[in-house]
Image 1 (cartoon, helix red, strand yellow):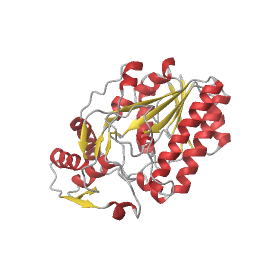
Image 2 (spheres, helix red, strand yellow):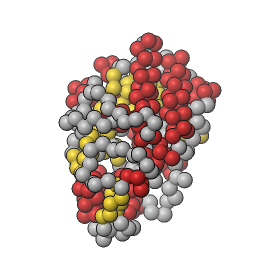
Image 3 (cartoon, rainbow, N blue to C red):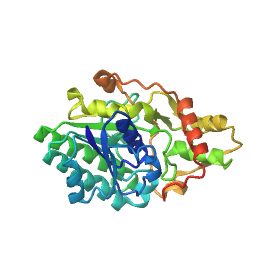
Length: 327
């Protein structure tokens, strides 16, 4: 298989590149390096069958050129991270909306099966026990930048689904629930690497809000192998599929866990949302995935617990402390 991975120099994309190359596939990574890094591709950069192309998913000619050569497309490129979404809402919307349309149109034009990465953010403030793929979305005001990412990804899903249904080209939508692991940076607001970096530096660990918010964190090593499998599973076509972990923890509990596992002397401090993100920011109290659809489709079952996940990130950060992070 020859696969195109948009955003392939990012956190999840680079792990997918590793996985596909290890399975004997050819990979073309298209990434503008706005949040990704060539360091993430160090394991595969010299591998036979691997190619990196620096460019934007907004470049229709470039996207069309490489998707025309592909057997599969994994669309992971997006404006990511709360900081990016809040600070650059217009650019984030442009990349997430128009960029997805460019990629999907090219895939459909050349009859190439495609996967579009989405997010648990599409559920908004719905804090049901075990969110299912067909559960309602509950958003705040559309003029609050907090919800622009969720709205854009919801429209991305609609574009992917409608194009796939009308064209007959295989399409799968994957909804990631707080996927974490080595190479993820806390620079854009991701909580686990941010806590770990603060703990390793013995700096105060900053918890936003009360810390009572509850989340589940899934390992990138559990999630990534499912992506090509889903794209080869006809029962998954034109469906959204939840992917994530099952161990629930409060954000305060996560901070405590990071302090313990790093052996840090960091204290935990609390910062209100307005200080962290500006006026009008909203958060949800709970987000817990139901991954039974993925289990039925491909036998998905996360195997790594939270301590194992945190330890893998700690080990990676300690081994790469001198490696520059993406600007």
